[in-house]
Length: 258
Image (cartoon, rainbow, N blue to C red; front, top):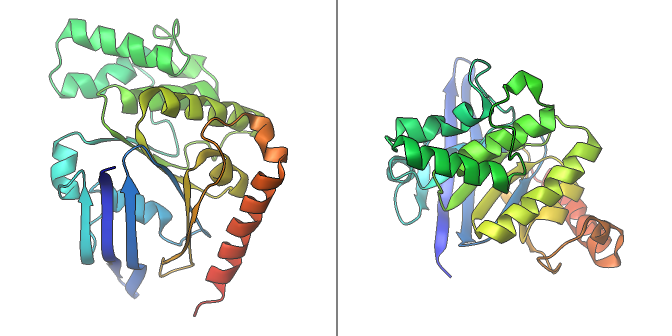
């Protein structure tokens, strides 16, 4: 399997008026093609900063980071990934189809291909028939699905997701977690996913990366023994509960560092 994301000794320090803030320190990680990797850790531990570094939205101040064998900046220009933010970020004056089509318009795809791709990804996220609606006519969960469709529209190999379901209630979140696993099974994409939720990380991932409080370090990488095909009720199984316990221990351990 190819490594699509490779981080070697990554450090990232922000210069602020109050002095330097060490957001990441000595982060080493490889993510293989087709992996679903979740990042979990306390608020401010650098999970989102690391995801943003992969997306060339932040620049590491130490170490080497490659995405699809390129620098993050080259990967951005090559459209190697789609990025899903915490909030859907849909334009209220554009229909759902218009929002999903936007990156394709920017990339210069022709009208017929845009229409075909938009229909395909709306179908993938179970929003077929909603393309003509406006964001305000959709629930929060449906808006977030539209935002995932927009990130899928240009068919990048990698999907970077920054707590996309954090603001949703638990029932909707469960449904979208199931839908995301189905989507991952159908598309075979590599997914890097930031979350605060232990059950979400355990349910979704093939690997769980546990991070410490700032400066963010990886304290544990846990390979999931769960099968890839996961109904929601797998969460009641002994294997799931044991894995959640291991993640919780990893988080506790991270807090023990100076």
